[in-house]
Image 1 (spheres, rainbow, N blue to C red):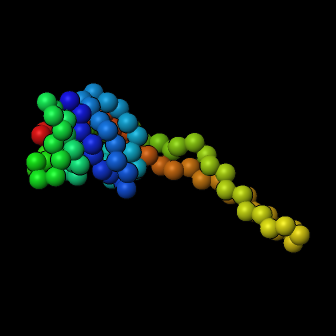
Image 2: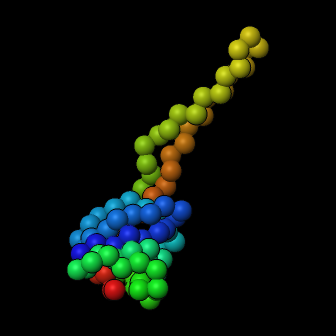
Length: 101
C-alpha cells in the first residue's frame, strides 16, 4: 500500500515505515504531523480525486537539518564582475506511520 502526498510544493510517494526529507515543517522532533493533501492511494487498485478527499497520512518528525551546499556563481564577461554565493536548504526528516484511506 502506498500514497502520494503533496507538501512543500512537491509530491512524494510514501509507504508505511518510509523515512523521507521534506521541506522544513513547523514541528519539533518527536511531534506527530498529519498530511491531508493526499493525491492518490493505492490499495487493491488506485484511488484518486473524490475517493481520497478525506484520506490522511500520519508521520512522526525524526529530525531537522540542512541539505548539501549548492553553489550559486554569477559572472559577466569583460567587466570583471563575479559573485559567489552558497545555499543550504533546510529540511525536516519524517517517518511515515499510518496511511488512513
